[in-house]
Image (tube, rainbow, N blue to C red; front, side):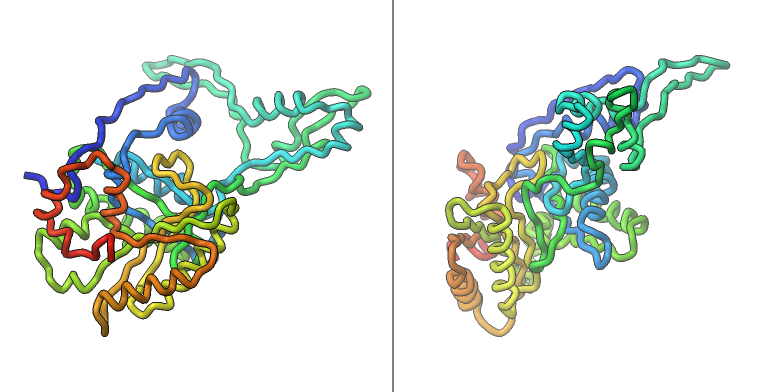
Length: 374
């Protein structure tokens, strides 16, 4: 019988097939599948977090690595249902219009909208079948160079061509943030991995870690992958192996709500202060925070709320004294309300209809971990 943390309550996934005539397979994946389709998974399937930080690579570079290197590799791992990303600077090609120049060249917003909808697009030419082979015919016009994009023709004005860079500034920039992520009070990119129904958590975790080890060899030397933020397999392995020494180590999840009306930036500032205070406690080894929400994240937070995962090791004092110190540190931060609980208990709270978990948890000895009321 499979052993797992939670009863298998995730609804089966629905497979959606996409067919985009004239597009190459990699274009269908990049332009259709990834942007528009998200597998379904509940928060109960959330089983693994990965943090990405670096010494010199920018937050935009880290987010790009997460989106186009780490996430595709994870989704290609059998058993993974969904990967949500929060943090970093999501890369955009931005067209910033100048109203005065637009008026001078008689260019309207409709003109700019029309050109931006068709800018940098490959054209299709069907297929050529020759000598037993089939070749896709495409006109390659897509560019990632802002200068080339800025040279796109908009209209004629007084007999002269008006290009995009005559009335706009075309630049690479970060999208408006929906959320922030940090580790140990330092900006980070965090990926949350959810599993498919009837998937063995321990086996999937090992395969993910093996794939990450191979991927790490291809990443910039300064990029670090942290796989110890939240690892559901730890709870299973501890329960099955009954490793008593592991009970000296543990993890907590703090749910933090900032004062009403707090902006995302203010919530991020207060969340950073929460991490700083927690890290001042000797037993705390690491913190990881998610404020706001990530794109396509079903487990979303409002902009004035955050979740902080805390790893700790009990050293020279009882756990009760440690927990009292945690509460004292958090209570000293003005403008927030916070609750302290278990990582597993936090996820159970998102599933009110789970009535029979108590019997399963006794089998898994989850009660040996810090209680949500502590």
